[in-house]
Image (cartoon, rainbow, N blue to C red):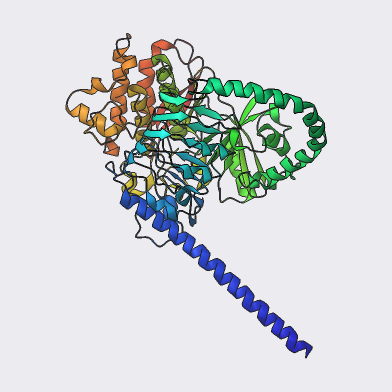
Length: 618
């Protein structure tokens, strides 16, 4: 009898296991299909005059194919579950996309700087229930802010500024205990503003009808409320002593509660908590000043890799600022997925650690623990070239010409060194104004120069893209879409777009001073002006009439040669550097620095040897 009962029990367990497996599989499959349906619906509902969503093709059954779509980040590159949607500054038109309802795993939504109009749906919880960052700023959205947003309890950031919202800000929003940033500036809102207990970063400016905040006028009836507040305050004062006594007894209990909530907080970095126990892991450092650092030191310096310490994020990983005990700072890059074993990663890092140049961000070391891979860089205090060229705020200072030229020349020198003199030669494949960092003297430092090689360990002289990705929108050479192959002239094109940014002050995907009828990108706008012999009209107005108009126009012409449609007609990166060097020679940007000199190799490619340049050499 016992064997029969045992068999019956096993059969029952087997059936239960199969049922659970089928249930999980069905749920997973539906979730994946719903995300595909979500993106298809979004594309169908929005107008895309600049054709920036052309990569959104749904004639593919490969797992994770939607993860290669422009602006889409997945939980895993081989799993069709959308994590973030970032479609900022793409000229999109239409209403708030209701297809978002099917992106059930979405945690970040950025539709800022587009031309969306109309009201938001009343039932916002159906669309952004698990979203932590909601950015709908700089659109033409109208109507009232839905009260239902108050039920989206995971929200950390809400940006609704620069729209046409009217009516009151729902006071229910103060229930959102996680809010760190809340901006509704430049709308037509009226009435009392909500009070956030956390005192987060707020911006209510340019809403004449709002009242109640420190920087706003007092609301009507506030005098009566003040008198009532005095009475209530007196009553409260009488109870203060008792409260202190009770508070003393509650303090220990509350500490336990707060600690428990923090541990259970689903918004925390679980991966960071999982490596806290690996305190004995040491960092492999290439330079002595921080050679004794351990993983635990990085954990402490980044507050366990808190989101508040993120200073940059891209397709290869997130960049954190780490503040050491002595007050100095480092940059720590956590890589998403290198597909390298620990041994392969260490070998690759040994190669990259020896790649040093004045215009490359110094790679100080690396760390490997469990499935995590970290790179340690020198900290760059002046941020990215992009942030300096496109500052936020009407009164933000413009980047001066000498600084722009210094950055252009130094960056060109760094890229030329990677292309021609570095061993092994490296194609960057993701050049943009965001990958050029600036030190305290505004000397440019190229970041992520080794990640193209690190992510795809093949001959980078002629290599395919990482996971089929093309790089940042607006910087990609036209031939890439046809061949899916990276070449040195593709990097030249991308750098040419950066030079256009430097000269015009415009973004690659959107030209603010172009006519409203113009729907193209920066390169297309320059091409149109060139055809009309009006190239001078593209120059940043802050640079005009300052005594260096000729220099600015010369850099503009170099940029135009870099973005020529036919890649064979573009100069090499060494030639670009030489052109810029001749323009900036009088500024003496280089002092006793290595100078790249061309020589012809047997296969006809330009290679470089290293000479020395003394200060002021002509």
